[in-house]
Amino acid sequence: MEKAKKIENYYGFENGINGKELYETGIKQAENIGVEVEKQEVTNIQMIEHGFEIKTENGNFSTRSVILATGNKKNKPNIKGIEDFEGRGVSYCAVCDGFFYRNKSISVIGNGNYAISETNELINIANKITILTNGEKVPEFRANNDNVIIDTKEIEAINGDKKVEEVKFKDGTILKTDGIFVAQGVAGSMEFAKKLGIMIRKR
Ligand SMILES: Cc1cc2nc3c(=O)[nH]c(=O)nc-3n(C[C@H](O)[C@H](O)[C@H](O)COP(=O)(O)OP(=O)(O)OC[C@H]3O[C@@H](n4cnc5c(N)ncnc54)[C@H](O)[C@@H]3O)c2cc1C
Image (cartoon, rainbow, N blue to C red; front, side):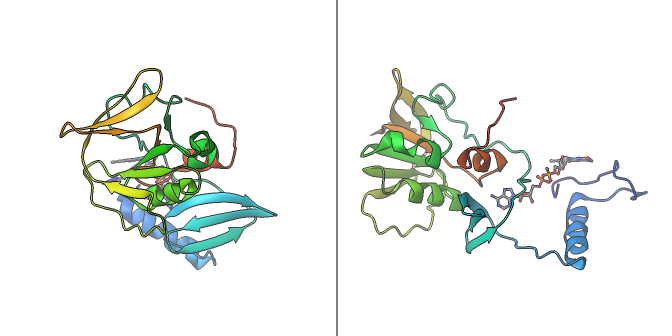
């Protein structure tokens, strides 16, 4: 919403309103009626007894219910082969697919809090994890685990035969890998829904 320069199709704004202003007005309106607003990135949601635990970059909250309203966005990086290997080594959910990679060498594509959270999910499952930032800056990550390394090279393609076998970088080097978890940007509704086991429909 914040990217919209001028919104003219909302009831009550005779001269239109810009997206940022509409967003900020909505937050103030909610606060005025007693809603507590936490401006934090949610990195994971897990079911617990009698509700959910919301994990954020700055701590956790527990709650009875959750409404997923993270908007619609595409987190898929533009890497050759990524779509071809979906379900054959490319996954978008560590909690859902991590167990397929017990004691294997895997990669996580991403460089933000969400990539770190997915890496933490996988740390006790995989033998070795390489965080691939695809040319982005290095994430702050202090794992008590020597098996996690960070590679900042730009990725050219994901290759394999029947399933993922390697990541080829633009400098021509190759990383052998058994699976790739895509965790770029922030987690959206779809990622959280998958983690919670909610049935989703492809559109
Ligand atoms: C340039 C542009 C112009 C537009 N103009 C119009 C217009 O004139 N009229 C109109 O009706 N629509 C317009 N739209 C569309 C409109 O902005 C969207 O339909 C609307 O914002 C969708 O609302 P939403 O609440 O579903 O998602 P969003 O507005 O995208 O809100 C989702 C929120 O969730 C937050 N979020 C996401 N992931 C996480 C996470 N892991 N942790 C914490 N927070 C998270 C995001 O930061 C964001 O604040 C425009 C869109 C764009 C891009």
